[in-house]
Every structure is written in C-alpha cells, then in structure tokens.
Image 1 (cartoon, rainbow, N blue to C red):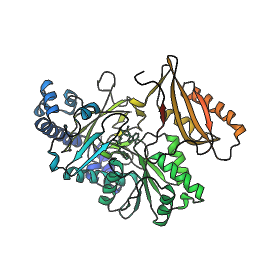
Image 2 (image 1 turned 180 degrees about the vertical axis):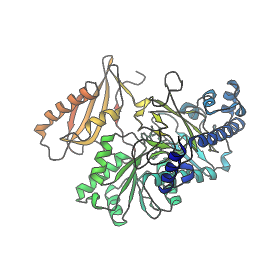
Image 3 (image 1 turned 90 degrees about the horizontal axis):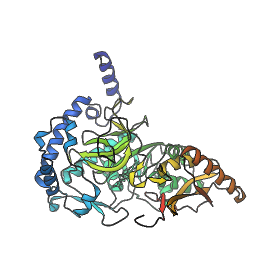
Image 4 (image 1 turned 180 degrees about the horizontal axis):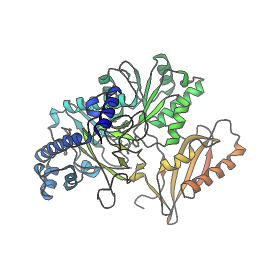
Length: 447
Ligand code: DLL
C-alpha cells in the first residue's frame, strides 16, 4: 500500500470514534507480532499449569519456543467441550481456584455443566473488551443501557454489565423476564441501548405493541443482540419494530463470554478482537485449516486468559473469516454471521440445513408472525421436519391453509427441503426470555 493511501487511512481512522484507537486500528503485521508473543506466553502458561495441556503438548512435541509464526498454531492440539466436561469442574484451570474471582457455567442439553473461571485480571480484561464491544456497537459514555440478558451463571448478563460500567454508561441490570415491566423501564429511564438475545428483543417488541407503546418513538437507538443464531430477515424485523440499529455480537463462555466479536456500524461482519483471541476456521471433518473466506468450524485460542487458557477450542460454530479492510477503519478480522452450530445442523434427506436458513424464509413473509419452531421426527429411516409457525394477528383461520402452502413452497425452493407446515394461532409458539428453543427434536435418542 502506498504511503499516501496509508496516511489517508490513518487520518480517517483517527477521526473516527474508537474506544481503543491504537489497538482497534493497529496495522495487521503489528497485530500478528502481538499475537505471536501472546500465543507463546499462553502455551507456556498452559503447559506449566494444566496437566491435560502439558500431556498433549508433550505428545505433539511442541514447546512455546518452537512457535515461530502464527501458522505454527496448527501444531497445537485441539481442546473440545468434552475435555471441559471430562475435567469437571476445575480440571482445566491454570490457577488455583481459591485465587479466582468468579465462576460461570453453561448448562447445555445433557450431562454436567461446563464451568469456567476468571481471575480478577481476567474480569478486568473482559470488562475492557466488553466496553470496546459496546462502543463498537454504538453505545457511548453516559448512555442508559437496558441489559435484558439473563444475570446469573450465564455470561451474558454480568459480562455486559461490567462492560457497560467500564464504558462509563448507566447500566440498568434488568435481566430477562417480566416483559411488561421491561417496557416501562425502557421508556421511563430513556434507555438508548438495548442488550438482549434477538428472540427476546422481538418478544419485547411484541408486548410493547400489545400495550400500545411505540418503541420506535422511544430513546432506543442501538440494539446489541447475540448469544444465538439469527438471520438478516430477523435483523430487519427487529430494526423496523423497535427503531434501533441491530448489531450482532458473538461470544462463548469457554473462551470468555460476550465480547469476542461484534459488528461495527457497517453491519458487514463481526470484528473479532485479535489482540486477545487467535481465530482459525477448520474443516470440521478433517480438522485441517481452511483458506480465508471458506465456511467451516471456528476455532479460538485465547491469548491473555489467566485462569482458563484455551488452546484451539473447537467452538462447533460455523462461519467464514475475512481480513479485508473494513470501511470503519478497524483492522481486526471479520467473521460472517454465524450460520449455526454444527450440532444444530439438520440433515433432511441428505440436505444439510441450519434452522437459521428456514428462519430467513419465514421472517417477513406475509400473513405470518416471526415466531417459529422446527419439530424433527423420524419417519421410517428418514428425518422429517414440521415447521410450526404463527399466523400474524388478524389473519382469519380459513386463510391458514393457503399460508401453509406458501411457506412450504418457499422453503422447498429456497432451502431445498420438503417440510410439513402447521400454522398456529397468534401466541401459540412459546416466547423466549433468553436463548430461543428453535428445534424440538423428537427423534429416538442415539438414532
Ligand atoms: O452466549 C455468550 C454471549 C452472551 C454472546 C451474550 C453474546 C451475547 P454461551 O452461553 O456459552 O455464551 O453460548 C455460546 O452461543 O458457541 C454460539 O453457538 C452461540 N452464539 C453466541 N453468540 C452468537 C451469535 C454466550 N451472535 C454459543 N450468533 C456459541 C450466533 C451465537 N450464535
């Protein structure tokens, strides 16, 4: 790149409003050097203090000092959710539990929860990263931030809370639930920022409309939504009904919680914070790295975590990465909206489908409301999907059959699978207060 272009870009970056300008716009070569230093320190720390990592690194004959470039990360062993479960509760911690400041846990669907721990320094790093994340989403010092993520063992509530405080914002720690009350708090306190899962944001919008409250006329301008997959159609629906710019944010407990990646105002991919995490995309079948731009499983190595360093954690989330420069001026890579978890992928007569692909067809279609569940059953040797979707309020029930036909037709032509469609009355699909349950899997266990 010519020095004139470089100067122009630098000037633009400086004039823009960043939370941590030097880090967020750091030239990529410099970012790579920082990552390599931190990667070596993390591998050393993990080898010295975590039995599992030491054994696996020895077996792979890799030492921290052998890592000469970032590509050498491929020599490191993977870590999986099963490793966390097998060493429940504290077996992968690199610090004695009595020196830690906090524990979180995520329940999952089966077995023991996954437990994660944080030192006081980890909590401070997390708060910094969440402040940066909120700022990137459009929140500013002094804003009232309505935090409707669940407080408790889930990382969404407290992670967002301390980030909002670190930003200098005014946080309303409302958590999920009591949706009627959420609406009066949003309007009375003049919240400018709403943080929630996208499905809960939609539930809030719906209850507001039932109460005759127009949230588009409220002070809300920014919505930071995450913790579950959601489609572009859902984004448009939420933006139209709440009157916010709806920003996607991504994270997971195993590597920290929220604050791993977030969209900027361009809404064109989520910036992954590379000073604290090393991102890779691999082929989930072979474990081999995929070239930039190809869809695969996201793998994350933590670069600064003390209590729970993670080496090549297999997230099971499917995405694509680009290092192309973003118009916002930030240099950190972008990952595309997460299509879904490989665990949630359905194989319907040989066609691989994520629930979010079906959502993209449903949301915004005339006659239906954006609330749905997919019921998966076994029909002989094959899997069958029934889409349960709600009719929009006011649609007469003698119109339901035509709506079902329309949905079936569009799912077939756009997603490529044959489904049964059941149109339900308004309010019949359960509303979420946190992560929505999109799939009811009625297939026999182990099938
Ligand atoms: O969901 C952390 C979080 C809280 C992120 C609040 C964003 C906002 P877990 O409960 O451990 O942590 O669940 C992590 O949720 O592996 C993804 O499968 C999914 N997920 C999280 N964010 C997104 C997103 C939090 N923006 C798991 N899009 C991850 C799609 C997401 N899926």
